[in-house]
Length: 242
Image (cartoon, rainbow, N blue to C red):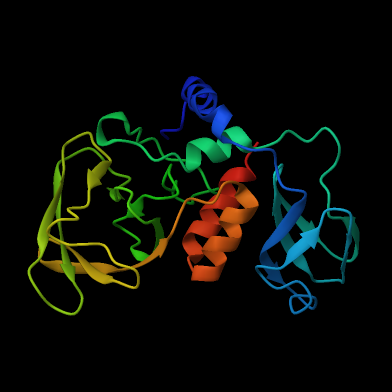
């Protein structure tokens, strides 16, 4: 399966190293289930010096500057990750990089185990196979992404409320294509139908962020606040990889 190369990750990290601040002294809940879900809802921020108390049947995913951890009850767990755990700032930098069309890398990243399909390699790409709600940074170019790059493919974007559509064409071998923001302007709260071969694939709903959050915790909070669940899951899964 195509993956980011170690060289590319290193290059991306080096290019953005000066732009990535030190990790925040906090953590945020990005997934929660079980008896304590009401106590630790998705989006709750946790003091780095605090303790998480879980009951039997609880599963909690916590994200901080060192990545994501999945905690399972019953038990008491420190919010702070164990000493020596490597920070994930380089991975975060690559995942959230705003790239020009000429410099886009299209390798997918694995988000789970078993037969689960790889996910988009960039937090801002819109997967044409799974449109849904997507957070985007205002003023930044929008890219559509596909996993299968073997053959050329054309999709159509059209406002859900009606109006003229615009074609989006992926060249053979390419996994990324630009959204035509002139023909179909991206707006906060906009809804757009994605079609292939004249048949609707799904609807994209866009939510605009005023600026790109500077670190993983702030990013998770912003995405959760806007209801961009798929991107929260991608962020958590990617930062949890070893």
